[in-house]
Length: 328
Image (cartoon, rainbow, N blue to C red; front, side, top):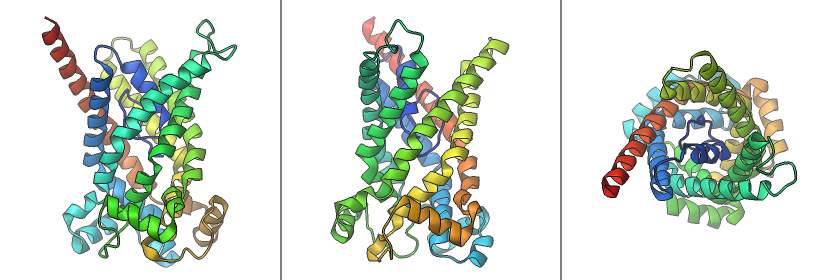
């Protein structure tokens, strides 16, 4: 349930809002070129903000292995310094390869499932093309597409968490080794730990992101109709990403903790459930524990949206000009 904002480019977020944006922004280029532009933009954005993404994950799971006194000393600078000192500078990108590998199938499934769900929803009385409920169709279609894409690609999300949280000891040696080891140690169901928390967060994430983005964009265009579309999209997308992050971060943290239960051949000690994980966080860390890691998450929203948007628009213009040259 990553929380990058909806800016007309497939950047891994709650899921369906990316598919919604895809359809709205597809204009002069074909489907394959559109997916390539979106996927590549997402990969560039993720790579540039990978250090902050890894810091977010490490903060989220810190409470599983540290006591309250140690957690009070946790800071972005403290953890970043530890990574450089103990693991080396390249360690900031641990788990980034699987994030990029995750990009294409997630984007493709989001895009096509959104299209299919939109057609099905328009068959429902009151949601047909003649009605004034286009926004409802987009919202529902985006939510269902997000759930579909998140479910289909979820094992890669688990692998990413396992790789990103490894420090000096490497139990998992790569994507395929991690998948096979998880299946061996925990069974196939180990690849789906935390899926429930992810699916619970998809709906609220898309609803908040969609409504905040559309409201800000519409208001801005009404008040300042001559402003650059890029600036409006970047600003609206960043704020919608921050709003979505704030609302759904606790579920994302619960998901990360569940993904690590039983990791590296250890015993989780108790059954991995959402209620059990929530209870454990409340007992050990209190309500503030649900927002551990929100600072680096906030810090990555604006650059992530900006990099993805600029890369996507550049590639879209390039593909459009190539099509125009081929057509002439």
